[in-house]
Image (cartoon, rainbow, N blue to C red; front, side, top):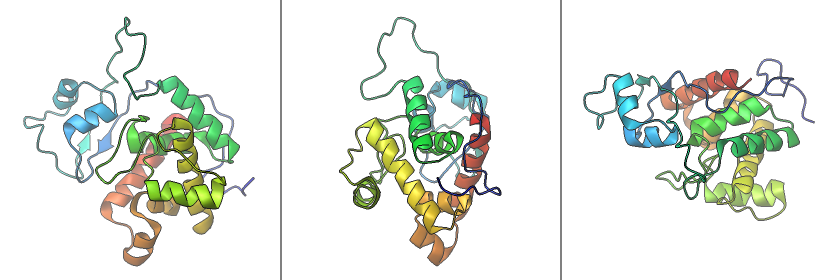
Amino acid sequence: MRPASPARLLRRRPTALLAVAFVLTGYTVQPGDTLSELAQRFDVALDALSEANGLNDPDRLIAGTRLDMPSPAPVDAGEDEPPVGSALRTEVDRLLTRTARAYGWSPAFVKAVAWQESGWQQDVVSPKGAVGIMQVMPGTADFVASRRAGRELDLNDPRDNVLAGVLFLDYLYDLTGGDAEATLAGYYQGLASVREHGRFADTQRYIDNVLALRERFR
């Protein structure tokens, strides 16, 4: 087990798991975000998201704007199966918890990263090609597969996707000397970029969002 980092509180502690369908209080708009994409990511109705934030022009989102997120959209009681390509949230919750604990991570921390990245949706693919729940780039998956997993990883498989994300967090954590914020900066911006240019403003917002989400998952 990796040594604890008291200042960052990365390591797990006894805690009750929160219900998956919690209300997210806020989200900071990132460059390239669209309202429809955010509605899909956080499973909320587009009209409800627009109304909650008084957006007259939903096509115009300004990076850095803080949005209030209403409760996730209700699921039709008659719907027996989730949409094609998506995983049930309860299954994702268990998967994130199990994988985090297997590698000595706080489940709350890993869940927060996954929620910030994809809203726990396996079928999300970013414009840059990042895939799935943990939004892992194929090149990153190949790297951790050879350096950490010891086998090939299929990013389209939720189990391998989460494993790839956790293994990459593990790699960054070791590389940054156990600094949680530096680990998150490397996950979002890329560690080489952080070391060359410092943290960008949107990187710091990403870190703040993940740490705030972590508290909700404790």
